[in-house]
Image 1 (cartoon, rainbow, N blue to C red):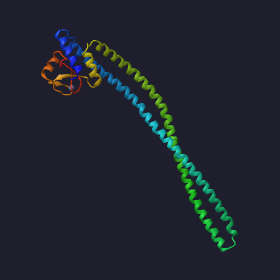
Image 2 (cartoon, rainbow, N blue to C red):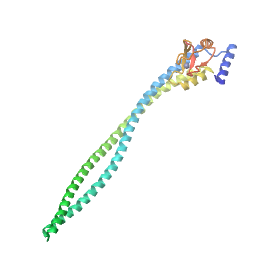
Image 3 (cartoon, helix red, strand yellow):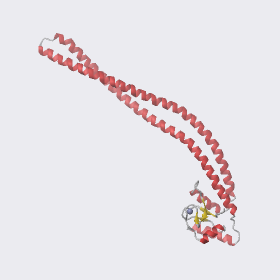
Image 4 (cartoon, protein in one colour):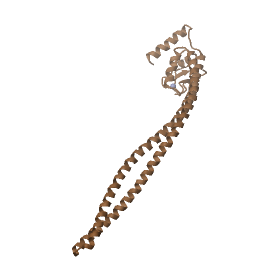
Amino acid sequence: MSLARLSSITYITTLNLLNLMPMDIIHFSHLKEVQSLDKMIKKHLDTIEGETSRKTQILKLRTRRETEKESLLIELNENTALISEGEKSLFDWDKKLAKANEQLPLAVSEQQVVGLQKEKDLSEENVEKLQDKVLSLLEVQEQIEEKIEECASFLLGSASTLKKIEEEILEVTTAEQREIDNYESRIKVLLEEVPEPLNSEFKKAWKKHRFKSPLSRVMEGGCEKCRFLLDRTTQSRIELLQTIEICSQCERLLIPYNA
Ligand SMILES: [Zn+2]
């Protein structure tokens, strides 16, 4: 037990002895109400979060498509360069083929005919290969352009969906926040009625266990939530509102069973 805890309990005990004990069972009822109102707040916060996550989802998809589009554009540029390179080679081999065809009938020796024929065959072979290559590169180009188009249309469509969702989020959030504000003002009123040091001790447990029951009843000789066992004296002092105890295991505020 910390020194601060010890001194606050001693303080309570002293007050109790002087019959000035400011605690009443009603204060624990207030705290229980605070706890359940706070649970309602959680429901509204979850609704807001659910709504907001739709937007996060779309933003994620958009980022993925934007990245995809960027790499497709790089791919497109690379493919364009390959096409122009292929077309240039094709043009060169076409020229060589035309030259061979032009010179072949003018050949004056058997050796020259063989040489030119070889040149013609090689040129024909390369022209054919390059034509196929350029053709398949053009097909790839078309596929890349189609994918880019798909990305662009998704980005355009999702931009308007996003706008619509943002409007819906604003509407839902405003309504939910109004509910939350109501609960919060009720909580504020209730807490104003809870005296110190109970008030501060509750707030400590509340901070640690918000939305996860900061209060725990004394049940079967211990803390209902974590089952930590208490000695008989502490148990009965809690029941008689003679002490304020925080469970030393789970750090929840321990409250009388019938609070
Ligand atoms: Zn506990």
